[in-house]
Length: 343
Ligand code: SF4
Image 1: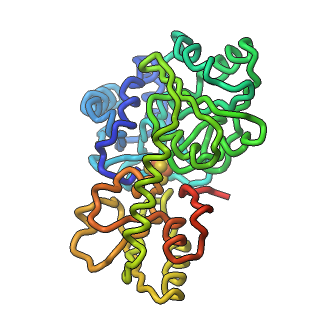
Image 2: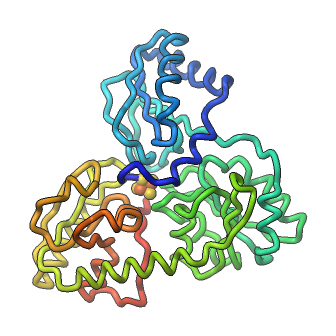
């Protein structure tokens, strides 16, 4: 995610650091590719392990490691590095993107030791339920499906599309696996530790979403968060309503760049008599957007920046769909969460 690396949703990655045998698998790949230099790209939650892993790889594989110290937010965001092989940890690849010399070491989660957190969720679930998770816990889904079916539920797991790699997998910017089964279920069970990923599903459908949290060993409903986020979004829309100059942000990141959309939005603004200028950057962060004479930002980079970091920016920051509402091109009741989908 192209944001300040402070958000807690990354923290669950830490528990999934490779065991000895997984590190051996990584060493095999490095040797198999005949790499002499290896770039390591860590999510924020795994930074504490970077020195240790780099040291181990250097000593066991006889290579030189280069740790990318830029923030790493997802498979949308692979570092440019002058190395023979980049090892990107913690995320699954996005099938529609072309990667050059990248090995995704996506750290599947630990073995499923207990189903207590699923049992805690089960009484809250409707009969027909869609299973969702992140890449870390994807290996658990078949067993959880079986467990719920024994309890009398009909379980569906949505097939992936071009942007997500695994059935049932959610990204913060792609809810296809939820949408794929929306007509076959009456609610969802999300396996994971935070609200970041299932929040977008709450905007896709009014069907209930239950979070079964393996870290806490408990379950909870995702109910209030959508209302709180919506209040913030309508406040941003209201603040941007009379803006004269819009800055339209375009990402340089391979999996976030939406240049055509940005140009279309600029043209749309101009048709409505508003000024709009394109701003190209890699890391979208408040300090890089200070000083420009714009009244409001429109973000076509990672869709979650406007949502998660709303309080960090002086000017309102809108998603493309919210910008359409400001311009009167979209009805307020057609409010939609921003996603980057690959078709
Ligand atoms: S664009 Fe999607 S995958 Fe990339 S950081 Fe944002 S939410 Fe995550």
